[in-house]
Length: 95
Image 1 (cartoon, helix red, strand yellow):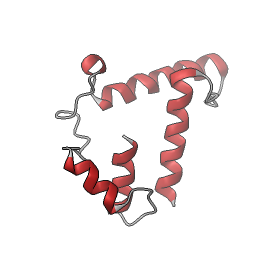
Image 2 (tube, rainbow, N blue to C red):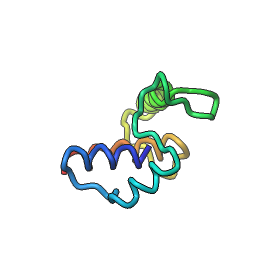
Image 3 (tube, rainbow, N blue to C red):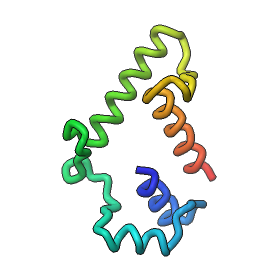
Image 4 (cartoon, one colour):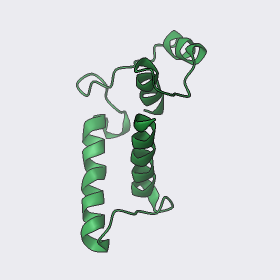
């Protein structure tokens, strides 16, 4: 997913860590750039990316209901890593 995000940023002319060489390497092995939830299925439980995102969002809502905030520590398992990734993507989109 990080490669797709960086590819999209590059296509929009925004700073990105992906290079033309990395794009060629990924495409040479059949990497798909589209995040189309109908076509792109994640092997884990056959959930789409949208379903996985929505599941994490629901976890975050429950976390906020319990703790009163959304400052999930990055060391707090999958949810913490997901929250950190959302913040990283937001920052990259603003550069």
